[in-house]
Length: 339
Image (cartoon, helix red, strand yellow):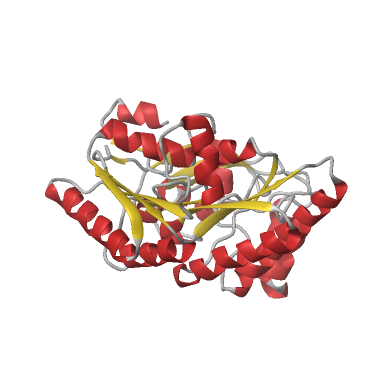
């Protein structure tokens, strides 16, 4: 999709790390986000219309090639992020933007997670970066083991930030971000306008999950919190890791508070697997207690279904089930997932 759009000088902004292999249908089903969502939003912001096949075989067209349309209920939005539980999306009309301008990239290392989080809050209070990503020490070292980029192995955290503003504005944004990073105790700050250099650091951030996966099997989390609570979430996850005697790496779309804690465990070690499952739930409880969500962009699926009712509450959960019952009374669409 991105490549086809680029051939016409256009751009489809949602960019999950799996963008080279994932499908548009899957992106819509999960309302996928990605590295650019801090500025450009997520999949639902680019879905104008669709054809969806309901459980009874009816094919319904919703929305269309219009930027504004408030006729009837917003049914298109209902199916985005529904994880295949309400219908099968067979066609989609997407909104595209002019091609993205080359980004100025700023990378900073920090001696403490708290300093990195303070820097995130400092940047978002001043401007809208096109990217603001977080990697902890586990992720940094896992990536460095594979990619050999001379990343700072002693850093507690690393931020990868970008601005795609045109003209001199991008360089100005980069200078502001570099200054904020330095003011918040960054031990090293590197800025570049070179596309290849910048993309190398972006690729390092995208590679975090497979890099950490070399350490063992993963339980992949997807909790999000309001930005002011990001520091409490990250430090709370570190406490859970210590208490459960687990390696837990935290990477994040830091600019919007969406984190991906990666719980590393050995499935052959029954006791460790049980501790990982307990930590998985404790991280969700922690996020919800901080005003956050059990899933920011990956969806509920089967793994998080046991926590959904507790998160939504009885009234919202009942409404979800009534909608599911109305559209799929026999429960044949993605049974056991989501609602």
